[in-house]
Length: 198
Image (cartoon, rainbow, N blue to C red; front, side, top):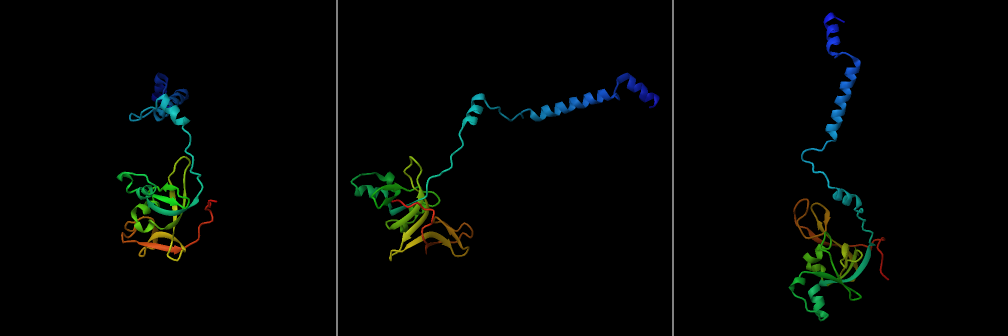
């Protein structure tokens, strides 16, 4: 140790191990505080909000059974008229499955059911629909569409792009090449997972 260094260590204590360790400890503590502190843009949750979030139950997955629904898909306004019920034009575009037992089941216009709203070829003809209905909701969510041809044979229905060889489930240009798609029927048995009604 040079005389200058010895003099410096005696006057300000910068080279004492205890001082260095203390400075490192303070520095690490400050770094930890900075990392855990909220950012300026962060809004803290109010106690009621954090409690509400923690008490929210996890959304139950839909365990509704996949069932077979048979009948004809018809316009709701026409079906009601046949039953002597007058309905105004708000029901003009609504379609329902009129089951063999005479029940009217509204169809959800989602990725599969929307075809019944778009395509008249699917209406007023015998169909078997594989779908689900949730508890306390009358709507049918269609998963698979089977129609019957003139000979009475069950055919699976979708739309098909001949260029890309991909199936689609509503009338629109092909998702891939944007070309027109065609109405397609293929012989196919009902899937084994379907629960048939007694």
